[in-house]
Each structure stands twice: as structure tokens, then as C-alpha cells.
Length: 263
Image 1 (tube, helix red, strand yellow):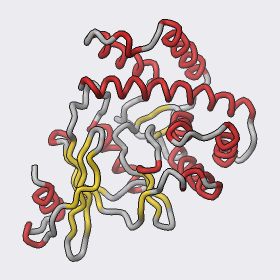
Image 2: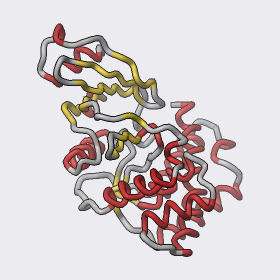
Image 3: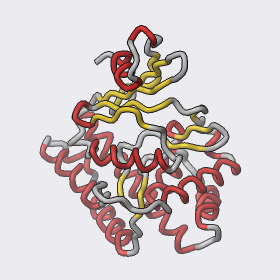
Image 4: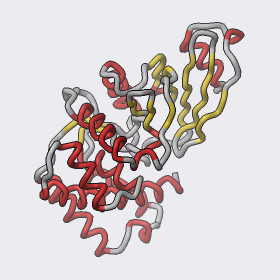
């Protein structure tokens, strides 16, 4: 699929009115390009991986995208066609963060505020529920079916995962979550937006917080600062919960990479 043709369809313009496609991402599950017109610029995303083994729900993502775009948290959507693995959004007026920027005290507070805003949105219907135990079980089953038992970890590791997830589920809240928050998904134009909502769903907001901490190797001190900014106060029990969720996040990420290698 030609990204310029896709952009022309989304913008309802003739192809001749558009510039060439500029590749901006050859991602883990998608390829993306910027296509510019005289009065507009868009991002074209084409899925490049089978979605089922990686537990991606494009139809749920489409619903989430409309909600977060309306809330000013995600990019405006021009074309979303889950059956064609296509997404076209307007190019946001800003730049993606560097890994260093996500670790400054100012930006730690800004990102905490953005996630608090996201988690305060009304819970929509017809959006997938993100159950961490089901996600892990799904990845285990996929890997075991391929004879890759070593990739699911030792029996001790699997049992620790079960126990931690059971404990986290007991006191979990359900919120609309992004579930993959790292610096390349943050656009800063004086205000912040989040990109790449393909793993979004109704789940535990601490998984969002853990994604930030784990992707950017937050120290215990920085985790505490981030959680304080998010909650508005120091809560030792909440910090201990975040530490447990960080272990679970790292384990799920390892499983995801293992599944992706064979997908």
C-alpha cells in the first residue's frame, strides 16, 4: 500500500497535491510515514505484523483513538480502517521526547499530570479489558505451542508472576489506559500528547506508571517522585504497589518480545 495514496484518501485530495512520503518509523508492529500537503500534514501508519499473537485489537483501538482525540490527549484521526490495518492521523505540532527528557523533574511532573488526565476519562463501552493474567497466559500458550518453553521463564519465575498478578488484581482500579508509555510515544508542543494507542484498554493505571518507570530505568527515588506527582501525596503502600507492577511489566515485555520474534 502506497502511503501517499492512503494520505490522499484520508485528506480527500488528489495525489498530485501531496509531497513524497517521509518514513519516520519502521516500528515493531507498524511502519509509519509523514505525508505533507500545502495546508496539512498527516501520519500514515500501516500494520506490518499479525495482530492476534501480539494481542492487539484494532477495533478497540479505533474507539479509544476517537475518545483521546476528543480529549486532546491523542492525535486527531482522519482515517481509521482496522480491517485494512490502516490509520491516518494529523501530524501533531511538536516533537517526540528523548529518553533524557522523560527523566527531568519538570517532565516527570508533566507526564504524571497527563496520565492523571487520561485515567480520569469516563470508561467507554466496547473497549477491550486488559487483564494482565490473561495477557500473560496468552503469551505463555503461544510460546508453549511453538515449543519455546524456555522463553516463558523458570517455574519459579512463572509462579512469582502468578502471585504478583493475583495480588495486584485484588486492589486494582479500572481506568482507560495507554499501556505503552515511553518517550517515543510522547509529543511535546508546549502541551503533551500520547501516540500509538494500539495496546490501550480498560485496565490498571499502575501499568501505565510502570511502563514509564521501566522503559526509562527510573531509580527508586525517581519512581517515588513520579508517583507523588501523579497522586499528589506520598503513599508508601502505593509505591510498593508500583514496584510490584514494574516487575510484572518487565516480565510481560520480555514475553512480548519472545512472541514477536516468532510472529
